Length: 347
Image (tube, one colour):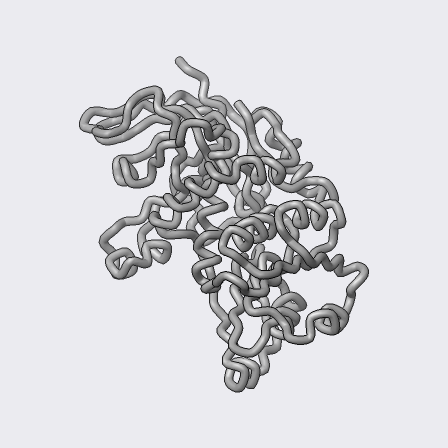
């Protein structure tokens, strides 16, 4: 029996690495031997707060890449030994949102690490609903480690599209965590004229600069949003919120210029956040306030191309690597916001 080490979450703050049997693919299914998986903020949210899609117990993880280990009967176009990345979500394809081309809002998704077993394991079973549409072949020359970051990049591609980023736009990004840093890289790729990042940790802000940000604002030195506005009196064309709380929501609407767009990229850990909104900003200044959640499959394919093209830049975001057996240590490191950025689990 092949050992299948798996990070299993049984409930709020109840998780452990345990040894399970290796899954056996049935008709139409594919078994992937995972080589790398990334820890996402939503993994931590599931551990500590749960989520509306979560079905305990579940094997955590939805950012993963590996090698096809076995294919079930009836599978075509996917071969044993191929290097693959598996998308986090399997959209149903038949609900009204999928039929309208907005599959990221699917009413009946299967999502790895939420309602089906995910990729923080030695093996991942892709159900037939996801074969082949959720399996993306990794291009030659792209490391599987960096390929495991395709899912978060795809989410940011969707965010860029939600923000309607155009060449020459002035961009402000609130938050300098891994998703904020990916926004910097993608904004640069999309041709932003200038990029500002608001954060709290100089080390991460310096990394944002390496990825293309020109303006860095450590909020410890700029406690009042007016201090930033004095240096940017016209505001910003597009503002992306990767850290969501009452203060950042209210400040973001001050940062955006007339006719601009604010994109709420991140959710909140546990409960809703109430904040004050002056409707005159929306009305008179024609500011658009939009959300961004997940990705379309076409955006996922585009993200994989970006990941292949910008492998060196993406590697800079990886701050720590832990073996899957060290998952508890990896979570503790994730809490160290001064030093941790992207954490990858190896096998």
